[in-house]
Length: 498
Ligand code: BG6
Image (cartoon, rainbow, N blue to C red; front, side, top):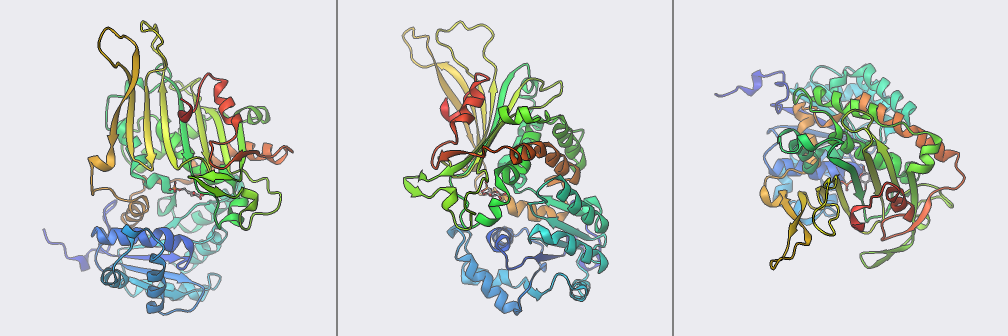
């Protein structure tokens, strides 16, 4: 069937729009050139972008389209080689890039933007706020006032979405005054990672694990998001944020919801998000006593990562003298419902740890009655998020012959990059394409986001009144010893200690 593109004025729900305008607020900013432009280029390479789409970057300074294209081309020199375009490829890609100077507080500048968008009448207009979150309220108000919130518009909001419950609610209120909930797409870039989507596939596309996915069979679950990098040049931002707000409130909790949620009645975005919200509401609330017992915060000292000496957090650029900001968090929680009652969920994240390694370990219970000598905890499922993307199922088996009945650990390994070569889509690329197509499954709903803040707030409050501050740990290790002691209380160890 041949579709006459010019006659289709409304996007088909959930399908890729026939034509689009993508407006990038913060068009010269870090996020734009580090993440969004490389993702757009990848989508362009993969021929996933509908032809004739336009990208309009807006920022404060005066530039022509050509000057903006040259600026982006120069920035591509900083991205990894495989994502860097040749001159010829960049020239074709850059045809869709445009630039407009905007003062975000000026209503007439939004009127100009509206005229630019209207002259085309694209099926879908995506307004991507890649700016500081302090600007979200003013931008959303002005977009609404200028009539840039029509039914074909969507607004994409990048984290951090607030720094506590109150500020998140304020942002959500302003967004809601201009856009309907289904027009507001909150990005948690972890949800764009193929490995994270595979958690859903593993649980709800396969019947194998479901009978075991409960307290009767699972001893504990560990979610680790470890980074070897430090805070780099982001010291001023990071110091106001800290690991709890930066990684736990969003990325780690989103992973936890996917592991713990009940099977949704359908694959619809709201069916999934309703179940994730129930998990967040079932998390055991923190008290000052449980924060002291079940949450460990740390801050890296100088050390060595990958054989290279690295400075401590307090010596990083733009970090205030004597900062008490945490660069590491490990915590223990429980999901208080019938499926999970009593099963510890351990979450852990940190900067300047031994290696970049993000994974989820599902530790199964021991055999009820051991008949093999020296048997130890046998079964675990390791969901590897990065740098590798795969699954490992750990079993015990007899290694040798000759009557040796000592069991040895062995694992079934699945490497998704090898299983699906050349078909993997990067996280940001996936989220951008979903934003253009209006697929909401991988975006966070306002109630989920607020509930996550509600849950972390008692921790922030307890820390604010605790004079002891974060525990120092050496860069290049696995965080403060107290994190190991916390899991050891339950008779557990972290994956790297096993
Ligand atoms: C961001 C945090 O959300 O996630 C950063 O603000 C962190 O501090 C980054 O480094 C980690 O993302 P990834 O995809 O590299 O694991």
